[in-house]
Length: 311
Ligand code: GLY
Image (tube, rainbow, N blue to C red; front, side, top):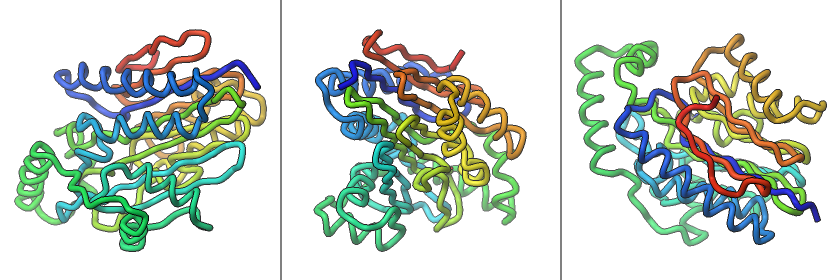
């Protein structure tokens, strides 16, 4: 058994309003504190990343679980994925509706099915069959934001997607990010979990990077990563697979994260962030956005360190 453990979480890359910084830092700190206790006691990386993800999903500060961004129809269609590096197995759900903790449904896909990804109505049915209760993830704030923005989009015409970039620049709250957690446990196993409400006002049925292994979530025997930002960029560049490949080739978590971010920026665009862990217990956070609330702890330094910006 290795002595090292590590955990790092993120609350989404993007532009965060100043008044949300304190809640975001408090949220990622709580998630790391909870996961650290599990890891320090010999718990698994899978349990640690799921515990961290549930705390972030339950916190409406973040765009996942409770407070998820509605799609263009006003519905919360959520994506999540859990991947275990030592087994190279993943479980994901895409566009699942009306569940409280999408990451726990994704975990059931991994643990109880022969599949890697369930989507839409099938994912909803799966969740109910396994006993996940009906739960409305919208909040008064998310409903108010949707009503305001959908009215604005209607008055501005139908060219919805080409305008998202300008809209997001004008209204940063539209682009609150995903949440994610990656961990190394004392058994030398790595795991990654990511969960999101997706981008506000996206077309119904759109699937982002989060539930797609290698795009928003990936883990191997030597590295684990969770990405955040504009999902289409991560799908096109297979962001998290690229980081893990670099770690497998000998790079540290920090060097691999930086090289991959540079590549994504060059090939796709500048909206991405990611958290990474390697087998040596090193963690890294990088982003090309203005902010990305994140926190981490390791067996060497078990008190959570949290920040809005990665240095
Ligand atoms: N990265 C989250 C999404 O694009 O859905």
